[in-house]
Image (cartoon, rainbow, N blue to C red; front, side):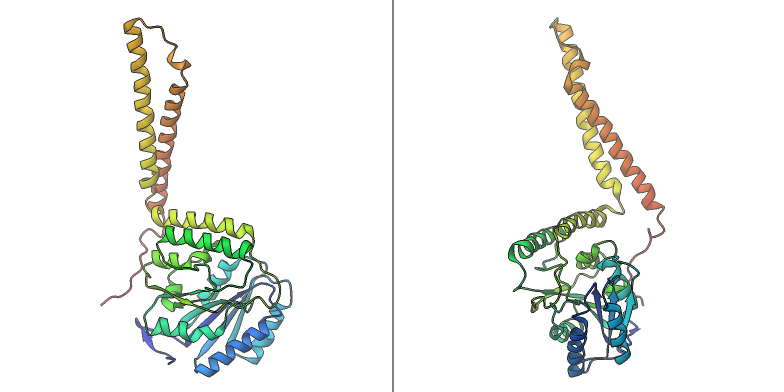
Length: 330
């Protein structure tokens, strides 16, 4: 059952649902998508808003959004001057969302609005912070999209520890508190569950959802997204693990490298002194490649240590160094 204006952690929400849709050149699908969403919302009796973020479309997408908004005041729109990417669109969509539950979906009709009521129920009744869709049966190209997606998700599960089969699925539902306490930036929209987990929202569930074949236009997925996804994952893992304690990683690596190089230099010097004492002919220490390897390791180790030290100084001077997520007070 929809619940309007309920209090949750002393917060009152204007709507049951906020549906955030990021789009780029989707003029053909928008009227059909909105009609489908309206049908589901009216059938379930939810109070809702549809937030459509036009990410710099070159077609008539914004014109259609304005026409749809005139017919239905529950539809609001944001238009970017140019294409900034999905993270920027979701950032502003989350910022504007007023619903108790916030649902994100794509505009290409591959996400079914019929899934929204169950996603809403799982968040409200079962207490999930996030419910992510899993398109178990897909209608995309198996070689160019399905296989890379499986590899990417397997790596994401291993790195983040979040057992989701489809972390990059556009169809997700969030408690309003979650999206108000995380910052989506760069290309990190792929890892919102991991951002939420790092912020303390770790009750993350999954629901098998229906995948629709693309009806209009062409896919915007490419090899660059696959590669960038891995790079973003590594960045996010590193920042989440060592962002506020860079000395722990750089200082540790620097110390190990310096010690190895230092003891290697001692061994080389001791070997030379032993040869001199015994009258054994031996080349100069500076003629040995091992001497330069050990010297290089000490220099690099020192640099790593200094990187960690400087990183710690920057972290300590950050304005956000004492910002923490407080769930409740009495």
